[in-house]
Length: 225
Length: 225
DNA sequence: TAGATTGTTAATCGATTAACAATC
DNA sequence: TAGATTGTTAATCGATTAACAATC
Image (cartoon, rainbow over the protein chains, first blue to last red):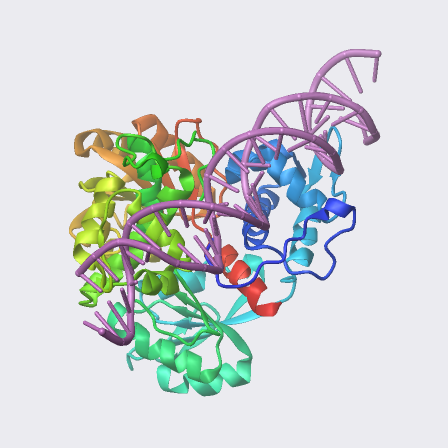
């Protein structure tokens, strides 16, 4: 949960109607994404239905809240049974309007870049790594996943050609800002930052910085107290 | 922001007193962790002071909210100037009671495991990777970071000997549950899951599943609408 | 039918925000 | 002094939850 800047129109189905074209509130969008994550995992494991209580266990969101969130958009569940995993996945994708395919550029072909390129964490959610870049000439041309590593100099042109909307920074901290500038210059609007650099970007660009250690600290706090 | 199950005692400094020994609310703990992340980055970049407005830009938390969160624990800022980065870092660490060192076990010496072991994302926040495991005999004994890779069979014993509190799963989905069971059996209470498996664990164990793709979906929603 | 689980209401509680005096 | 930024109040708004009827 992060992007507080954007105005939030609340889709409270209070008056019966579904929220139609309105924008989701930050909280709702974050929780729906969360449900989607667990549902995708559950689907992979062959689960056919899931109850709000089960979803609650895995997402740590109160089960009433889950039913409330979902019922705002339609009657997706079956009383006494639960929700159909597969159909709920596609419903939520529709609500989040992220049902399509999105192309991403991966910057950095080190261990982290390799790990990302060879996993399907992104592919499972409709993201396709269509280009991988590195500055190291020794790495350029090497096949990683389904791509050959390209030199960073080709970044701008590739972003245009491949219709890339997201850039993923899997590079050392001292290289991050320069590459972020390149991405911004090329028109990328969403940057996923795995480095430890603080990125300065124009207001229309969203940066999401990954911070597993901070998530751990948070978990640890509740363990220690 | 995740762990909803735990009871939350709100430390609202309404009556003047600082919250002393009370437990932080989930929201406050999450936000403080967030501030810590940005402050750590800022410190690395040599920044000496930071204003609530700057912190707001990077964390996407409203600046009034930030001042409110901090002032509940003391007067850390200087009017007209801002907050001293270094001292604020140590104050927040104190509040989160995570100022010490914590030992973690890394499971999986593939690309992701290597990336984690060789980065300092965890080290920066007081986490030390004291053991790395893999099932592949070809990897056992190979040096990774400052450790030699051990065989998974040694997991239980190592957890006891090294006082490990956190297990990080950087393994394929189909291996994750078995290793999670091992970790739980060895007494680990916090599991950080990078696989795409849904983990079943006893209630006293906290699982945090990393889901960059879901974070991306969330960011994308606000971009597309 | 009996058990389970959804959909929904109503009440409470915490988060968020604008505004501004205090002060560096 | 003038400008900037904190600390804090007061009001609003959304999130959370228990409870329960509806229904599979």
